Image (cartoon, rainbow, N blue to C red; front, side):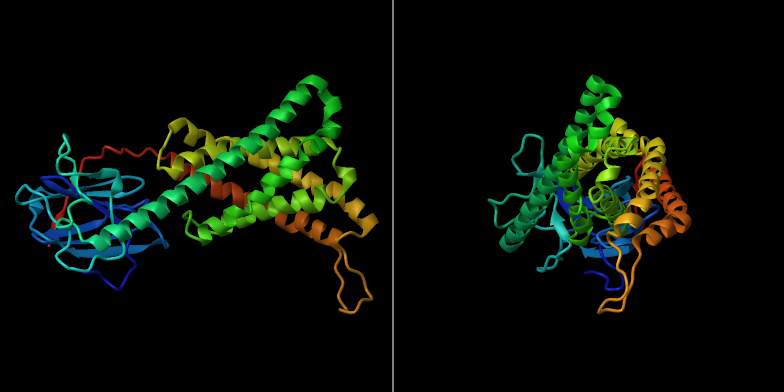
Length: 374
């Protein structure tokens, strides 16, 4: 049984001889409303799920009876764990009393065990057709395999980008240590191929939330990837005279260092791992690097204005068959005058809020909460 008023979260279930274990896939939940009786559970909470930040709910008619007073739940940063105490020990053939399994209800494969496991593991055995409907097993296996492919792809993508920016950073540092300031005018030429390739690959980050591969808004990667692409391809690659300036060396160095901490963090989050030092670095190194990067980008735009005035590149003059004119240097001036500081402020404010949220101390061993009777 499910409510049709609000979206439902993904719920992963498993069991042992004494408990049914539910994992509700919602982030940043505070004070969920969890109610149970002997054979029914109702959940309601605001959190970040597959459809963003919304009010999510679900209801389930259970296949056997539980002991509501002995059931409890625990809220963590990534999920809500619900433990339902069975009235009598034993293995349930299925979770729900209905013959139809909701599409949002999944098997928790991380806890999939057979009844004969030494540690009294979870009873989701594919060899016992009387314990689980065969069609549901096939569907859950397909979902599990797709989820594994998604995680593998995201891990490989982030690893590839990390290696790419590691190469760029290492090349800059190694050659600068050997040649000193003589290297700065040729720094761009030494790394422009891997830099452009990695930047083109970053366009995939716009599609990840669109296809549901990652959670969050499409706006953030669009602004970040789009802005950096304009700087790289339209202002640096398109004008040779800016490429030997010292600001290019420092800009690429800033970009690279930021990514050296961003992509390892994303690699760990693919598998829901949280290493404190990586998280801290990811949401701390941006504090000096983002303003420095913005400053370098502003200098690149400013230095390029006379070059584009001279060449007329990307500008459209009259007369033409479309009766349309566009002056690219004017757009650059307008951005510096009216949008540069607001854009930097917006990005810094966003990252500051993310830092507060991510580094906020969360006690993952919070005492479990008793579930309300309904």
